[in-house]
Image (cartoon, rainbow, N blue to C red; front, side, top):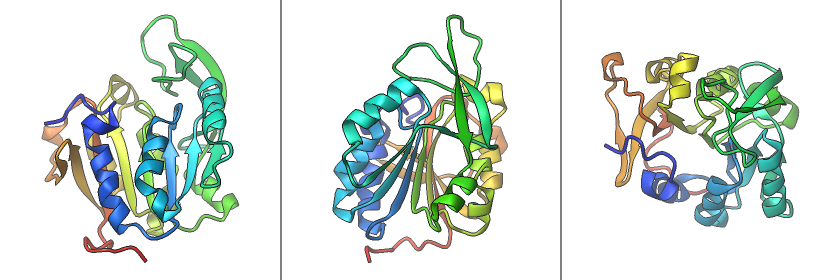
Length: 234
């Protein structure tokens, strides 16, 4: 069922989803990579979508991971680098991690020992889009180690305006439990979207009920219902 395979884009089905998106996204699509870490998913975006000349906004609050992004993509004209987190409110929060590589860094404090704690800036999608002049986001990938629900809550205006068309997010980690996040909550906020479970052999529509909640990490895809399934590049 592909639960527990969300960490590898090739094994999780994320690469296949981008292959499909390459056929339906418009030219120069606006893409957000939220929780870019050291660029693992960004490299996949460039591999699959470069022919569309996307404008890709990276968001990574961990300073060490961000430095690696700068080294890799600092000269790439398709990339916009942002050294802060996205969340529900604007402010300063603590980022917790177990190493200086930024892997598994989260704004949620878990119960493990030996965590590194850093203060980081947090923005909302709504505010960032307002001051950046972004009117439409064609695709967002969110991998923020359990903080995904807060990222979505910081985009309510853009969602209400139907200005976000597609969302991929990871859900089901221990941090999801700690923050009190559920797939049902995502579906309530994203009621204008169709929901799919991403598997190795494609994406499959979900007829979800709260009793089916599984807290074992996996990737989900939300597509605005007003977006027809036979969209083509323009």
